[in-house]
Length: 394
Ligand code: DAV
Image (cartoon, rainbow, N blue to C red; front, side):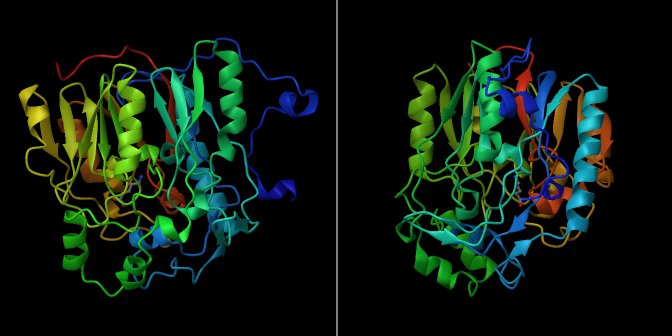
């Protein structure tokens, strides 16, 4: 594969050439929430991204009739990749100009067909939303067991970075969750086949009954379904995170002193919590008004004097072409500290709302990268935020 497929790749050559692990002085891994002062972050890259063949889990998210149901499988156009990289590189530069350290994932050759003993799919996906794959929990970074077949090997893009973090910060830990099988037994195949003929009301009913395309056969979760608030961790049950995944998160992290809670929203395609319910600063949450919390689930916030405000409507009526996410990427922001937030530059209403809530707003041009896997929160993963593990819900 020639280098021009990876215009943005940034692996340190020392490691590859000498075989000696690359050690970065002063590197620190630690983060307990999404709002303490950000010091070090990973920003995704659009290089070589593909639209994979449809798979059982991705079909539940992609609207019926969309060309992404396999019709358009193949590498994204070079023009769209370059434009998305322009946005992502601009975002990285804005963060670096604020003295935040920015790392980029390594490139992976996604164009090969992926075949395991359990499944086969036309290609991988890409390396754009690191938030889906990497869960930073205190001093550990965990690679998540994702449910889309095309994303099965996405962790490869982070292996070299994780290795470098491991060598550079002797008190951090890098981890990998149990690998799922993603065979046809892992999914409700009849549900998937019937899916495109269901009305919105029917998919909502199924979602309220918590029947998703993913079964309980594998341990499954995306890191973006996990919301960290110090000692408390809130996990969304949906099509990318099953109950076995939540049980695994609970057993692992409760043994380290965290408390793990499950959250559910009235949403017919619950995938990732970061365009649904977002912490803004201690005591303040932003809720998607189209996805109310299940009854009783506001209590823990209200009892502890947290305010829940509803997000204003997105600026756009539709997501950009070939995008997996909804227009609610408007509320998918990157918080730099308790009073500074990066918001997508076309989301004027959302910027105004943050302004009224007392934030300094940093506009970031990112809409042309949305199709590659999401908004500003999706496009990043925490390495280090200042601050300690607080108990916000005593
Ligand atoms: O609203 O489509 C997007 C979340 C991406 N991490 C949505 C969810």
